[in-house]
Length: 386
Image (cartoon, rainbow, N blue to C red; front, side):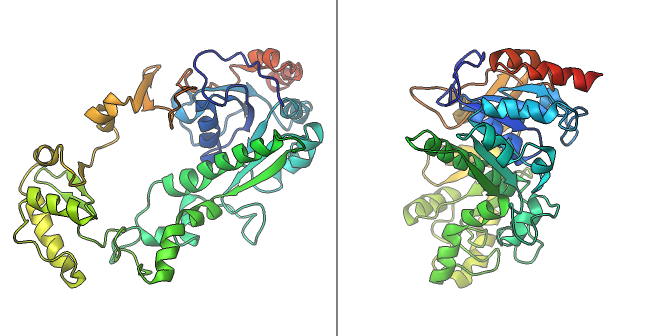
């Protein structure tokens, strides 16, 4: 087990004392490492000279909050050895390179586990470590397309709707990687346990997310075409509707008792077509849409306030932090002048917090060298600045 001293101050969360090495990348790897940092782990991000990412200002890259950064050139003389020294002192290592890249750089699983047999080595990729596409480039949209997940999203007569990169990168990728490395860490810490490699592929996670849908498909209660089912926008009482001011309300009263309240408050209780008659769903959708266009989003929000009609205003990213419920729960917090989602989930005995802003590349090299007792970091810094 790695040492628990880490030099990080403030509320830590349930992973206090866990040390994580993150080899810098983009997308799901950094988000997974941020989640571990939010939960209290001491995450050291190994940045490369010249940076890596999508060009966002490092000071505003919130996926690097609660971390510390060291600068290591893995192609320099002392670079690989420095990472191996970090891995020797860590509980978890995360990398998101193409298969074989870490091995070529000298920091692959075999090298790291030889130095630290209890290390959990987390690998984050889109296609996985093996298979015909393993060596190919890709992004979120391709991964969710291949698994069938993208085909479910959008209207039946339009191209599939792209759900940002939330469904693949973060839900199918980051969250599965975090579950995997924490499960493997539990195993490593049991008597007789050992370290291991966690192969987290976005295609695997994105496919797994659709488990319920596959069950419904097998049972004959889901049609294999988008916009035709209860939960994919095909149902007129599960979707979004435009209001008089060009905004939207989200509607989801699936249960009959909630639906009855919804239609009553909407003002169509006596005239609405039978919701159980799917042949009249288009007619029902038109009636609901016409009613929502008679008032503004604010007015409809007031109408449905305090009800169980399962209706909510569709808020923008900038509006969401100011909603009374989210404000009361402090779902969003401000740190260093940046409004951002608070750590989740919440813990009664080991609360977590945003205790530091986005790590600046290389800013913590000396501190980590001292806290983790890795003198080679200072040598590596010399390599990168000569």
